Length: 298
Image 1 (spheres, rainbow, N blue to C red):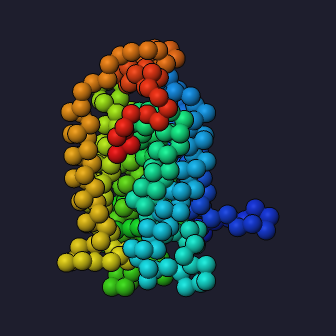
Image 2: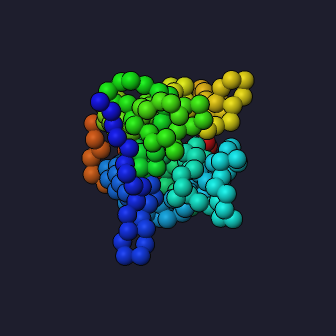
Image 3: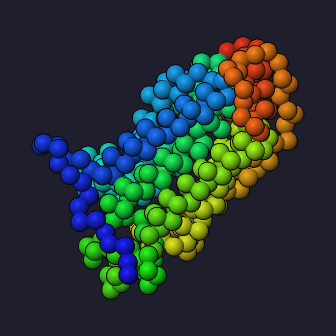
C-alpha cells in the first residue's frame, strides 16, 4: 500500500497550460481572503479592508517567497534566464513570503487607521488554510517529501524525482501531507482559542508563528529534498528553531501587556464568546488617531 504520485502536474485550457501548483496558490489565497473577511467583520472591522490588504500583500508575499528561495538555495534555481522568477517550478519560501507579505499588510492596515494586532489575529488561521491548500501543489510537483518509509501511507516517487542517494527506494514520507493536516488542525485550534479564551492581540498570530515553526522542526528532520546544510543540519532547521523561540517569546510578551480599556463604540454587533477583549480593543482603537497604537505591528 502506498500513495501514488500524480501522472501530470497540470492541464490545458485551450493553448494555456495550467500548473496545479499555481492553481492551488490561487485557491488558497482566495480562501484566506474569505476567511479573514468573515473573522474581521465578526469583531467589527470593515471587510473591504481585507481586499485592500490582499491586493498589496499577496504580490508582496509571492515576491518575498521567491527572493527567500533564490537567496537561500541559489544552486537550485532553474537554469533559464527567467529561472529566478520561475515560481511555477516551485521554489517559494514560506518564511520569506509571510515576512514581506506581513510587512506590506501592516503598512496598509495602519494607513486605514485600523488595529494591526487585531487584524493579524484575524488573518492567522486563514494563512494556515492557504498554506495547507498550497501543499497540494507540492504533491503534484512531486517535491518536499521525506525520507524512505514502508508505512502504508508512504508516497511513491518516480525515479526521476528522487534525490541522489535515494534512487533505490520506492516510497517516502509525504511530509507535505503531514504539514497539510497540521496546518488545518492548528487553524482550527486558533479559531477555538479565540472564541473560548481571552487572548490579547496579536497573540493568535504569535501562536501561529510558534506552532507552525515548531512543526517545521519535525518536518525538516524528515525531509530529504535539496537544502543547504550547516553543522550537519538543514539550513531551514535553524530558521524553524529561531522562529519557534521568537514566536513563543512574542506570545508571552503580548499577554503580559495591560488589557485595553473598553471605550467608545466601533464594534458592529455582539462579539463571540471569549472575544470580549478583542471587541474592547476595536472600540479603543476607534478613539485613537489614524495609524493605530505604537508597537502593534512588531
